[in-house]
Image 1: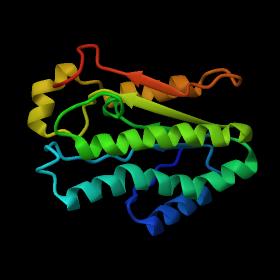
Image 2: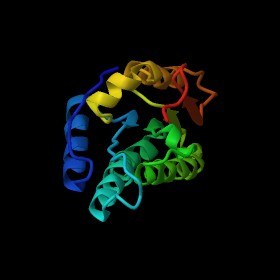
Image 3: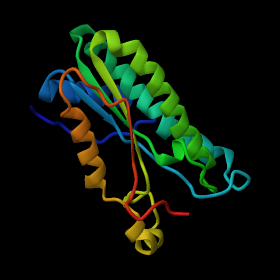
Length: 186
């Protein structure tokens, strides 16, 4: 198959629609959508401004919803497709200083569960991947250096997605929690 990557702002529905058009023009119908958008601030709820909270919700929750709105009609029409929502262990485990992030990832977990049930009859698989701490730019350089031994690589998360995708046709992984071998940070 062909993979096409297009960078765009998931908080802007017009840019999302334009990205979808670019991908389908370059590669044809979308068979796999990987929702990986994620931003956060590591602050207590009391210290998190309403604007910060709104940005996190717009990116982590509404952004993937907008991507799905663009891609799903064609998947439903063709009766095939994969949706991978990259969430976080924070969707199911409490970490102080991540209220907005946790709310969005838990919201995506619940949304994915509903979507999975609604789309089963269309042969569309919806998989929620819940990784623990992953060495990405979401973390400050100092935190990445301090906690690198307790972080997974982004390629490890990608391999989890591929392993779920390669399951036999009569199997689907609904949810997968993956964590660093060294345990959680915090």
